[in-house]
Length: 124
Image (tube, rainbow, N blue to C red):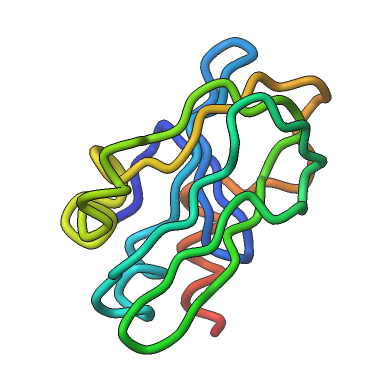
């Protein structure tokens, strides 16, 4: 099950939004599809993103995949632990495997509730 305190995208990103701060990561489904994650190209702090822009690139033994920002805003924190331990995304995608924190500048649009995301996964 996907955590209830988040919203989800069709590209398999999650966002935990508290006030105007969103913590971003990829879903358990995404990390399982990618298999063993070996490298994360983290975004730079301070960059401005629109929802749907590439936030970072995650490389696995299978391929490299872009991770898209589910919200518009400014990157205010990155998970530096992923530089040395990218496998944290595989081990704990909803916890220690978070990628970045974004200060939201626009109301998020088109994000799915956990129930909607589960239904979406069943439709794939």
